[in-house]
Length: 164
Image 1 (spheres, rainbow, N blue to C red):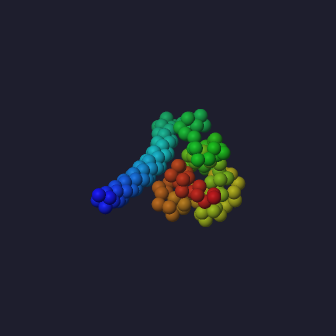
Image 2 (image 1 turned 90 degrees about the vertical axis):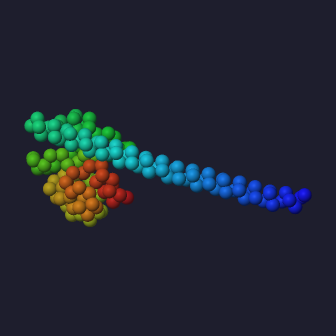
Image 3 (image 1 turned 180 degrees about the vertical axis):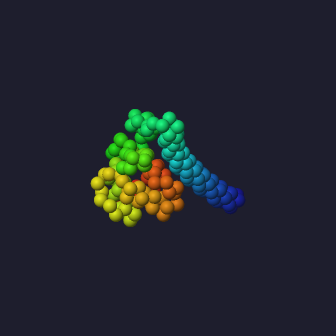
């Protein structure tokens, strides 16, 4: 009788171990999927902010006015990855350049990151001029981004890695 129960007990132990392994695998898959969804949500949030800027720009072009700093601040949502960033948007040095920085980050950090990425050779002076804009375009081209010279969330996500 004991010999009959022994194989049944062994099979029960084996199958119960498999069930817990399956549960762990399912939990890992769910956690991985959740992480992917969180990343997608952050990307969509950044895309919304970029679209808000585009709407403001187009609206100001239609009205023939330049958006005020208050309008720009209203279109920006805080970047939770770095709370020490500058709160003001910076404009291009050329009068027809328009706004080229659309994230809350200081011009010095942008220039340092561009310099570390090897696309900017000018001084880190906090002034966004033609050299900085060209460096942004070059960086965007080399990273498969839209090469428009505008530092939006997608470009900054790729560029800020060079600060570390």
